Image 1 (cartoon, rainbow, N blue to C red):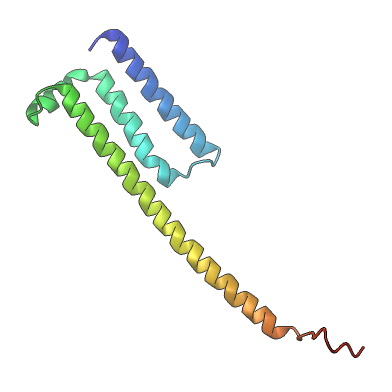
Image 2 (image 1 turned 90 degrees about the vertical axis):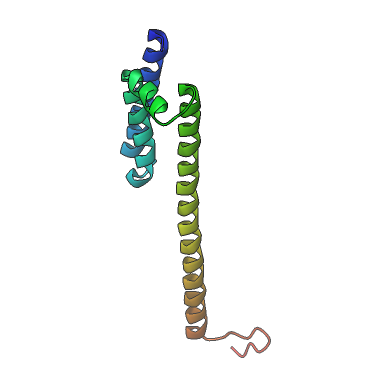
Length: 124
């Protein structure tokens, strides 16, 4: 790995790490949802610092070239992010359904407590 590419990867991973921490600090991203992004940034940072570790690991796992290993890891990370987002959406859908049911019950209770006004028979 060339020194320019290594420095670029280090700078990008540190930028990602700082940006994720900035979003968490500004309450634009919750900490529990940012853990995957923080792990990704730290992983890229360490792989950029010690690229020989990446080459040895790809050789140990039987990949022909380290680039194939990187693409494989990138695909796994994208799958993890998709799974994480799917679980978040599922939880939110359940919460929306529960809130909608609670609102309907409250509206029903309010309708029963109010006297019914009949516009046809205004005896006042």
